[in-house]
Amino acid sequence: MAQNNIITLKVKDLSDGSSSGTGQVTRHLRISTAYDPNAVQKAILDTNIAGSFNYSFNCSKPQLNITATVTSATPFNNDLEIDVNGQLQAYHGGSCPGTSYSISDYIGF
Image (cartoon, rainbow, N blue to C red; front, side):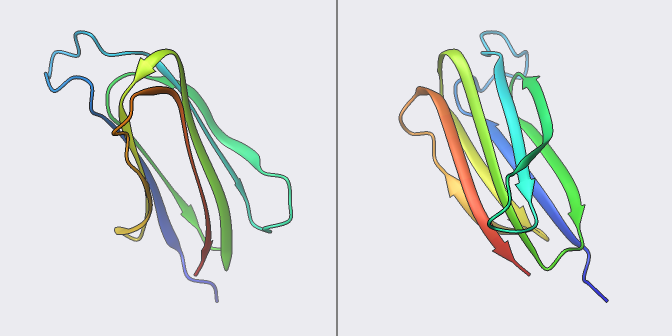
């Protein structure tokens, strides 16, 4: 029987530390996955976000190919992180503000 794994993608907004959300840039987040590393990825989330954002889902397959991309018309500063069962799997630091960040990872459970 396959193990159920919890995958969490975290987008941390580094551009605004206030809780009011003033000045936050609206960005577009797309998360795509495939269970076969050679297959075409399909979007599981395609949405606009503002501020920090977390998205979690369950995976019971033995492997997962995942890509998360955050884009915006104006520069922003974010960290992107992928966790598996609460453990860091992949990370992209946003120390250089830009208009697009992407993180891809192959996860074997």
